[in-house]
Image (spheres, rainbow, N blue to C red):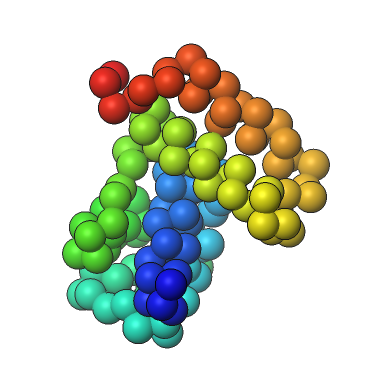
Length: 127
């Protein structure tokens, strides 16, 4: 996997976790900055990366969908079943790779909650 592919995957993970309320908007902006450094580029990605901490909560909801679209990535609407499925996969992958977040007290309840969505809606693309 190239560094730009890895950066795109990381940005996609940040986006889905933000959409499901798992990370803060500032984390998405940091992910956008990292994506630019890795070589990804688009007008909306540059605007997203330029957000200040004071602006993130207001601007990320408007800037993230076009930034992902320009890069050929998927935006999951807040609270969507497909987004919850993607978040469950991202959280599980983080656990398996030993991501430091998996040792936090809130990680396991979030993962269990996300995985329950997969059990209740095994094929969310049909909902």
